[in-house]
Image (cartoon, rainbow, N blue to C red):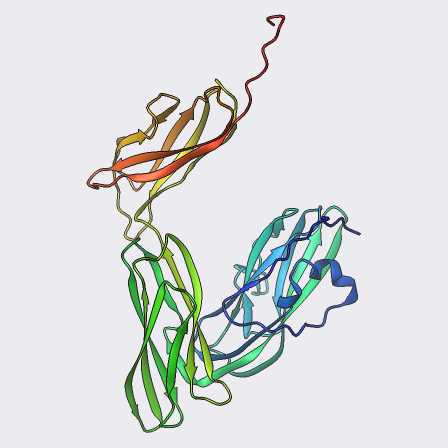
Length: 366
């Protein structure tokens, strides 16, 4: 029916918690839709999670066809799971997609399924999340269904439900604390907190024990050496429970400077023909603070790149960069520098692109 690429990439969904390989039941006529979600993610077994815990599953959808695809509907069979992408409301009050999610040929989109650990608890079996696809060129509709199962504990409560460092300055590090509360037997213990990321450390501190109540404090530290970018990981609380010994905990952080600059990507350019692009410089933290750009500098000492900037003090600046390419074909890359008022170190960003071969001269002089 549809034309698939001759080489198909293996696309796996990125889950913040463990997933099993037991497949959900799929109707035979939905094979083309099902192929856009890796078969290892047709079923999610989140095993055991604590009450109040923030649990999310990031599902990567890949369009392996030459036709454009659209995700037109995201539904679930139970209120215990919901699609984060459903941010609009239907006339009858249901959460729905505000608009179809377009997945161009050969590209990917990530959709997020969340588990409600506040209103729901106990064993969750045979809960389904359905993705409905529409292929506009041929008017075809197909569905892919994901099975979600696991156990939401009532005897363990996490406050807050995840470790979220938010935005962190580079080379600063950060610390977050979570209260782990247990109700049951007096001798219940957390044995360790295992971390996957080398940029995180954990410590378990016992705070109180008695009358069937046990309280620990989980201390998670983000190292100063964490690289710039998004950190998304999980740690595992290992307990002495026989049936459910592990509790996964989501960890997120965004390491970024207070002021960031988008790189100057000029794409393909022709020798001698100027090309102008815009570069955004913005303040990233809260509260937002205005700033002034004092100086623009380059690695090279020529006039091939010229800049227009504002001398105003504001939280967002738009620079206009004009590049007149030299007669040197091939890829180019150069470090550019912005000096911000009151800051000793300049911000470094890149100018890059590819210079085409110069057009051949017309022998007739035309």
